Image (cartoon, rainbow, N blue to C red; front, side):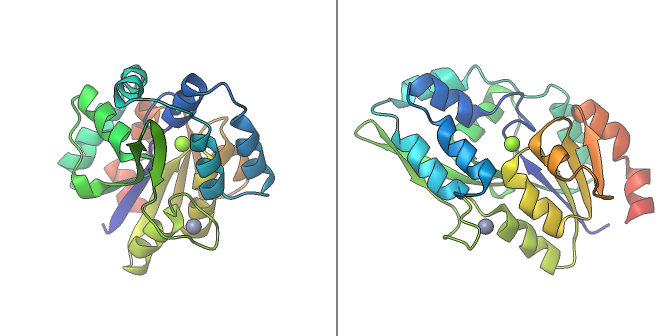
Length: 221
Ligand SMILES: [Mg+2]
Ligand SMILES: [Zn+2]
């Protein structure tokens, strides 16, 4: 099976969106305003993130870590990831979040993900201000991290794409490139692609493992 599972991080693997929690704890300003612009389609996620993280006047890595350490992952993800490794399925995490906190959250939960298995942005602190480090160059969709371009590379090599996600940044790559879409129920991706025949909704990774068994994958691909 030439399959790649592309999986979002925040809100999919974690139970809450780390970026949104950090913003809400580190600034009192109206950062949601920029999310609304993204939803309306008048601003890309790249510009929105620059504006949002720019609202934080001053922070420290200790303060960020304290908040990040409260983030929980879906407990059944661990079992799912063991299953991925056992079956040697290619698994890539695509995220608009920061590598710093993604690695820390995995470490907190004693999960080891290969370095090249995470394609995300990152940040650095310059005199207490958060400066974003984007993984991909500016693209025509104005993505913060162009999930589409990562998935496209696998697709172009002939891989079948299983896309797992929840949010706005997952809609475009899933719709354009996925062979199968697993979308967290009641979230933007599931709502937006409601009538797509490739879409299956899931609640958590326990649920998801009942759907994508090896038998299912062999039959489907
Ligand atoms: Mg998400
Ligand atoms: Zn893009």
